[in-house]
Image (tube, rainbow, N blue to C red; front, side):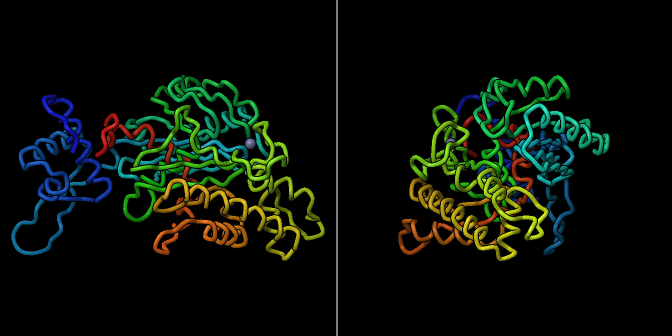
Length: 398
Ligand SMILES: [Zn+2]
């Protein structure tokens, strides 16, 4: 445990956060179970829980009627204590999700566009979706709005709340997005990079035990990555860590939106597949979809050039995954984003190529899994941003 002594206020905060984390990730528990799990003594846990009950952050739940005697009162997070709203911006979509303090999704709205849109258009649609989302919440929840989290792909000034540049979304250039949402909604607004927000969602909403070391690869119109190390997001010295989409896979290759040539995004992203789709005889094949989906539909119809394009994209991503695994040695790689819906051809090519290039001691290959959060990972992660204060305290690991 952390060496914290002498500051009662700090200790109190830390104890609250530890109790809330245990309830959030371990489910309802009695005071005795909470004391065991947190290492706090009975008196301290009684005080902590008393305070959390008074603030209605926790609530009594039906006890487990097991064994003899009066069952101990069980406590749980009060889901209605706070609601976070998350907005995920993509070149061709806006997704909004509302999440309660217990992690239940209360609302999801997603709007997809047939072509990439510019920043002002996306922001207008996002504002409308957030208004619709808030209006759909029952009044008591509306009053407990903790804030709004915004997930934007690109280079951000997070503390200043400014999108410096998003190479795949024209118009996102020095946009004070946090101030604009704050003015509109009068609640706290937090900004995070989109791929990192998706990785946060895997920490908070992913299945299985709480993961601490994993990579989340965001395969959408662009390609991003969230690196989670020991339960924390890795950001890098300039908050640009994880720009895997702009690692070079074809020196001297096609020009990328970042200005360089041969980036991974030029051969394997939704944007690259969308360009490949223009060369396919979609009408002849009777395919009405567009962009990357048109390539996977053509591949599904047995069109050989489309199958080849998808396989090549999968191989390029697989190679990048192997490089990342060899660098970071994660427990798991999670794939999310729209491209994961491209079908088994792409995913199998990613898995096969990655597996054959990974260093894996004792024959244990790092598993590559598809996210179970679907299209909403970025929005769910963003929704947790204004609620992290309940579960985190400074840089103290709990
Ligand atoms: Zn690039």
